Image 1: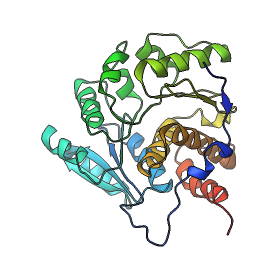
Image 2 (image 1 turned 90 degrees about the vertical axis):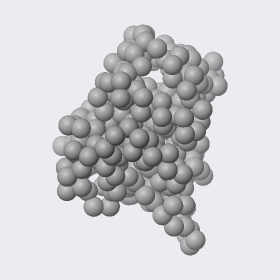
Image 3 (image 1 turned 90 degrees about the horizontal axis):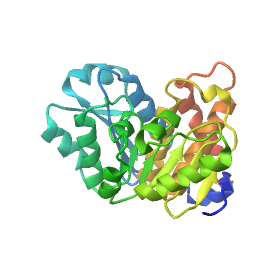
Image 4 (image 1 turned 180 degrees about the vertical axis):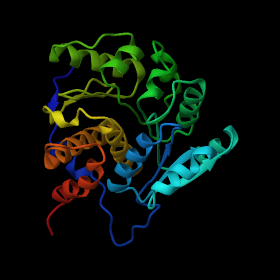
Length: 281
């Protein structure tokens, strides 16, 4: 097991996507998020974060019954309704999609699990969050068998315990070892959220984010983080670095906002953080 690196822009700044004179919306990355119902706010937060993080197109696939809710609240985000499993599958299999996200607002159901499998089968990068982690409770090997491309799991302590049947330790060194073992067991990035978020690669590498602002302990903040990661993956950033960059950007946006922050504030602050990371002219 390797020693953790402290998360800092020097680890990934050179890999941040940068549009140029020949860029267009498809070259800048196409993010597809599955939108939940009746819980709709989580996927909308993730979508706004993905768009603000540079994705050229951000779309949400939503059950037809939920289309009016999403469409009435979103302008720059494409809302794509589906009526059945086959129409959802067609949206997932769109060759233009660069990365996919499932979990925000999803239910703990067979449908969520099957949709996660469908996303993983595309061999495109996938971020699995929230309920889409819980549907694999105690059976992480089912994920390992299906992961064919870069993948990031983003559990908080409760989801980590449920998925891996392992109580996260309170001692940082032990938490790091647990995250490393978990990443090795599923063969993908495990981002264990907390005051010191741990980003573990299956090869043993670990990036440790410095203590995040306590204001991030608010509903929806995790959905924003998942959206940032998915956006960077869609823009072809490597998975470990995408997860580390997203975690740093997420925390910096919270610091910039300060007291009274709610999750809705975070996407609007992402461009300011990204601008500070761009090379000077």
